[in-house]
Each structure stands twice: as C-alpha cells, then as structure tokens.
Amino acid sequence: MRYLVTTHADRLPADVPILMVDGTVPGWVAKRGDHHWDHHRTGGAEIQIAEMPFPTEQSLVETYGSESACIVTTMVDADACCAAAWLQLPASVLTPATISRLRAIAWDCDHLHVPPPLQELSEFAANAVATLKLLANQTVQELELPPDRRSWSEAQWERFNSDQFRRGTEWLIAAAKGKCPYPGTAGEAEPYWQHLAQVQQQHLDEKRITLIPTDRGEIGFCNLLDFHQPVDPRAFHRGLAQAFGLSGLRPETLMLRDHRRGGYQYTLGCLPGHPETADLDYTAGIFERLTLAERLKQPQSGSWGGRRTVGGSAWNTPSQLEPLEVIAQLDAL
Image 1 (spheres, one colour):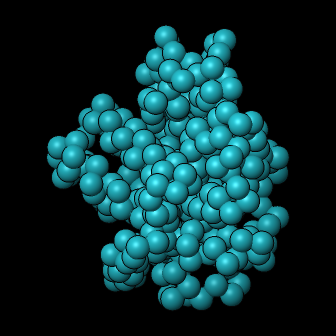
Image 2 (tube, rainbow, N blue to C red):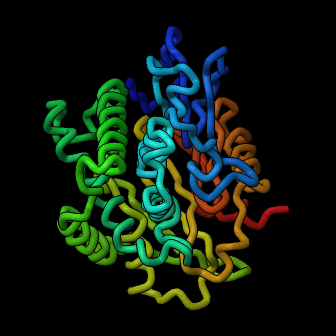
C-alpha cells in the first residue's frame, strides 16, 4: 500500500485509485474509483473513523477493489493513521475492544482527551498518540534526512510525512491483528512526557504564553515564532494553566508559528476541559471570515479551514493577519 501526505493536488498519482482520509487536498478533483472521507466540515464527526463505513469480511480497500490504491491525507497524525488502518482491517478484526482502542487514540489525537464512554482508555490513548509522534526521530534517521528540519525541501517534507503516515498506520494494523502490542503500552512514551514538561517550562521561561483581552474575556495565546521544533498543544495548555489559571478564560486558543515559506501560520484551537468548548464551531462562519480577511490583504491567499474545535490558516500560503486581527474575527458578525 502506498501512503502520501500532501497539500498539493499535482502531487497525487493519476494512475491509481485515491483513498483520501482526514482532510481534503486543495484543488483535488476525484476521478472514478477514488473515495474520500473528511470530517473537517460543519456537522462532521468528532473523529474520522466515526463516519467511515464498517467493512464486511473484506476490508474496505478490498471491497472497493483498490489494493493498488494510494492512501492520502493532508497532515499526518494519529487520527489519520486510525482512518487508514480502518480502511485495511476486515470486520473480523474490528471487534468492540479494537474499535474502542482506535476510537480512543483518534479522540486523544484530535481533542487531547477521550469522551466519558472511553475514559478507562484515557492513559492508553495518550501514550499511543505520544509514541506515534516519537516515531519521527526514527523516521528522520532511516530516511537520512538533515537533523535541522528548517533546511528540508518540500520533497523531503513529503517523504518524511508520508513515511510517518505509513509507519503509524502499519503499527496500528499489526496491533489490531494481535501481531504486536499497541503503541505506548511498553512505556515508550515516557521520554515524550519528559520532553513535553521541558517544553512547557521553556514556553514559560521565554514568555511565549500570554493572554489577549477581548470584550468577552481573555484568550490564551502562544507565540512559537523562531521555536523550531514540533510542539504538542498540551505544553501550551498546561503552561497556560500554570501561569494564569483557566478561570475566566474563553474556550478559544491561538498558536502562532513560522510558515515553511516564511511569514505566519496559525492554529486556532480550544481548551478541552472548558465548559464552553462544546458550543464552539469554527466551521460556522469563522473560517470563512478569516479567509476573506486574508484575501483582502492578499487575493492569492489560501483558505483557513479545519473542524469544529480546531483549524488554522492555509497550508500553502503564509497568513497576512496579525494575532489581534485573527482574534477580531472570532466575534465579528
């Protein structure tokens, strides 16, 4: 099975079926034999597998006659890996216990927590997501990529992300079939949590976490410009709670980092345990307003997008907005 992580339609293979999950490549037009599942929309499910068909005794890949297919996503994470695994697992493997594990992993990935029915799998899911992220170190070494990711070309990023997608998916498939333990069940995640605590303290020491006042309360903001390493939003959220407490804050959060092409890239997120998070819906006009604000400054800007409680600025074009301009669109009519 081929795996591809891209946000460029011209990188998609034209001679094989495309099975696209957990995202939509901008400009992609499906051809006959292609299939697409993307929960990043108004009314979309909380995790990707929740709105995918349940397989018969054959896997979905076999049912669609797509053994030669390329599984595509726009950003590799554990939710995308669960969706890609779901495509390749038959019904006989997808027992209630296996489904619960995959659901818990996807929930922790996308929401940084699991819902009450999966609460007993909370620690399992967090450790699985952390361990899948730690695969990055092995991937960099085995692909012989430069240690400094700032030097990577678009092609190198694609190789890295696509191989991460493959590795994470294949691990979940093997675990579901009982061929190996699930990620994180052997203590592999401990270095990740130690590093996350260090990053949290670094955010505080460098005063990267601040509050942005609005008429409806303050919003947590994390400035990651010139912070050249992957960041788990948990470090931001925990640092925010440590520095300011969460009482009185709005449920929205904003993270700013460097875009690969220079300029800004934003992640608009939320505080998972906030009582108002359940009422957030960025897909109900907010992403559209932010896209319009971008294009008033730069007509060629890409679109903001995502799902109900998390999303961000365009993948392929830097944002032209300043943080206060982003925040202003949250309450615009």
